[in-house]
Image (tube, rainbow, N blue to C red; front, side):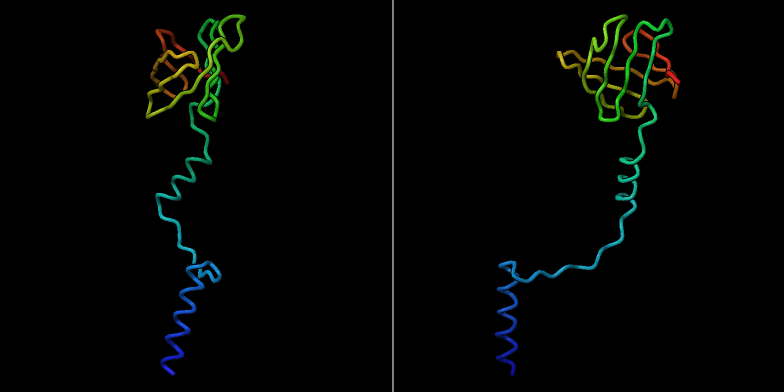
Length: 121
């Protein structure tokens, strides 16, 4: 009988290696870090949206996909590129190659490139 068990074990091992039989483990509960990462992806960043200078001449839209689109005067999409936010700092990489940065003073004020932008409601 033990010879039969050994042969059956070898056969099962071969089947599992070749993928003919798959064994699945029971689902594991999410870790707190997994849950936080999912929540971060589901909730839009608080700085996403349209930012405008006080005179309305420059309009910068921070898009949810990490891209921005900036209009200057009558020039729509004068500058475009990607951005990253870390804390209250923002870094820009324009598609033409230049870089810039800024600071969110609060949730409604952005200082960038010597200008002050305000969140458009």
